[in-house]
Figure: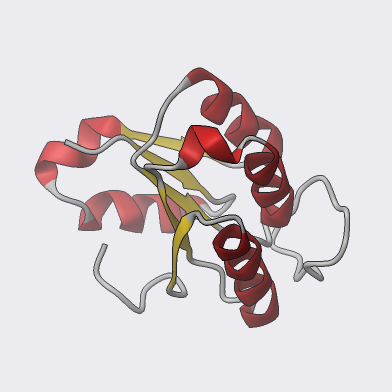
Length: 124
């Protein structure tokens, strides 16, 4: 049974995600809408899967920015504590291709597991 963190500010995506996962995993999902909530959840819980959006306020954000509402901020926070995430699979589901590639690159450079698949293109 997997514990899953879903980080996305879009309620429709959260509903669609919930509808697509295995019935046995539905009660193990924590949905958060912000960087602050994501980091708090990561501090308090251990997750098997973390699904990340970059553009959390629905604004397309440059991955090199330091915006506090960017999913890249979650990646930066995780990398500083990477030993806590050796068994976590990160799913980058942003449609912001440049940001998704950069998020994945940073995670991979730190020997963390990652897949990139814009939301809706693959089965969960």
